[in-house]
Length: 555
Ligand code: COA
Image (cartoon, helix red, strand yellow):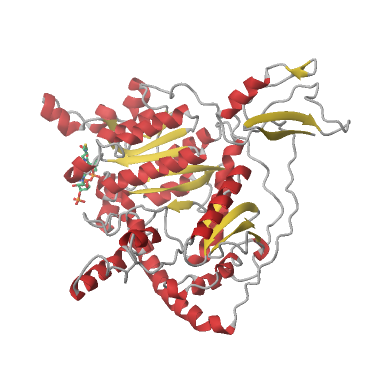
């Protein structure tokens, strides 16, 4: 069995390759060549030293991640045993009224969540759905995802983005994004919903697409675009394209992702007009659906206005033209279902080697996850000890607390969720100087050990003596409702601003603007966390991650 050891050597990273079998004394390298799963080259020994100098290995691996891996693909890994302490998560009688008040509030929030979900499922409304399915003979976006993905067990990102915006409610911000499995490989999907104003891009659509690309980049997830878009939503055109974090950045990201070896596949299942035309042509492999997919910078009306020529969408930029003449797409699908089959087959050619599914089942928490409905505090005054929440999230309700007696208003420690080791940083009152110091110490510790962090955030406010002190208190709003006296004078102004703060502190307000990746129900927390932890691990299974010098280009 071969393994690799990482040592920190006066700030320099040093890899020692050692052999654990046979001799008790570690040797530099075995005599047989072994394939390095990180750089995908063979580092063979010559006379007790490495054929390639150690610096080569370090340089090549340094471009990957902070943790260096160089091991045989035959290496079997096993987790070190742990026996973290079981938290006492039992309720005491004095919790009862707080629990019940929280539960009443959570049920109201849950209803709001379900109402939003229902609205999102209706997309652009009945007429638009009829136009999409009957007149245009296209498949609805959620049905497309069913054909593309292995199952419906996907993680949708920011489904409520686009609600409550100054320019109206834009269901799903006009496009669905998320992470789902294709042939067992987690992939980001970005899929336009053409029932929402022809799939045109509003400013919030662009923001949502850019965020999904960020998620793909940060976690090295392949990205699949289902393109069906009329380009920019023209009434808001000045806010959509030119600025740094607007539409143009989508194409910049595509180039960067390609150079980073993050695979991108596009399915043209509708109109790809103007900016939308760059998405499939900059993806590494693209599929187009006959009589449905078109790609052009300016459509037939624009051609007529500019040259007087009358041309059909099919002749100007249809499936035949782009797969037989321009070469802008690589696969011609006669019907939509065939296009998703192509996309699935393309994904199966990517350079990943996935591990066998584990047959062991992680321990369930000892306490019911449903209790979280009564533990999610309706306000700071209704918070209970955060360990009650932790005990309903972690495997076996186990938690190895770190610095338990210091800075006690922040709880830090190690646990597992669905078998994945995590570090937890959880507010348990005011964020004091000691609590902050402890938090930064713990975060650095997790960084050093490459352990993902989960933050359970609920920073309670301190008395706002001055505005600058109060400012540091929030995540969702800078100032909590009821703390505006420092800003305004009259009772009327105070009432007005408190109402505004109440409204703007809501998670539905923030998620509508994409300040987060989505709102979930408390009882889904463990399931969602488990999925996220599985997804972020996948990057370890890509066989080659060395950055290329240029993106892959077909144009
Ligand atoms: N900006 C704003 N609204 C647009 C739009 C655009 N670029 N493109 C379409 N819409 C709206 C339509 O006004 C219509 O709104 P309504 O539902 O309130 O009536 C809705 O989107 C659907 O458009 P419609 O043309 O009825 O549907 P369709 O399925 O026949 O065609 C498109 C959809 C996208 C192919 C077609 O509308 C089109 O070609 N649009 C123009 C594309 C373009 O030139 N974009 C350039 C952007 S830089």
